[in-house]
Length: 229
Image 1 (cartoon, rainbow, N blue to C red):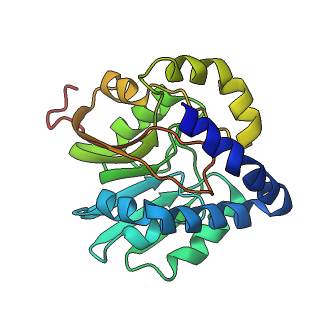
Image 2: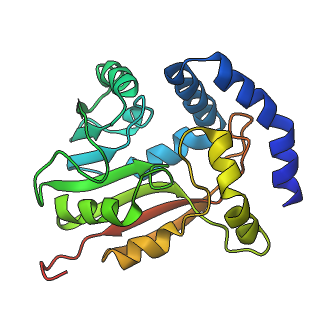
């Protein structure tokens, strides 16, 4: 906890100042660029490794995940924010994969039932309005046996970190201004939604662009092959 607090006190004011002085698109692009330089690009590449067929990326932002996709996938990228979606459309033009960017929310995806081979998110479930509704939509649009590839931060399982994350979440929401909850029990929610967890890998990115050192998890899961679940 001491390390996390010291990191926040050292870098938080500078990040907050940049957020105030930048447009929303500029700030998100800067944060993605810095985090990628500090190790997130390699994590994104690992997340996308082996993907094929029709991929649905949700909450695509300005398109920071796009460079990780290979040429053998077709990506439908869903983004609710008009400014971010415009930036993502620009980013899609230089990607190796074929990418179309559509408006939509995680709780109401603009794709048909059982139509995608895999779903990808990068720090999205922390900020959706409803995690259960979002995961129900994931289940709806995935083909039987379809995969989940998620980069998410989660509530700490350690005492007192988890308790403090619960206590201070309202303050964190005001500070980050991006709707990010830092205390969601995401892995439990995925299991409860009926997905099989294939693997969970911890990852940590220490960067001045991310003042909160949150427990990161690379989660791989799948929808059951049979249709009764």
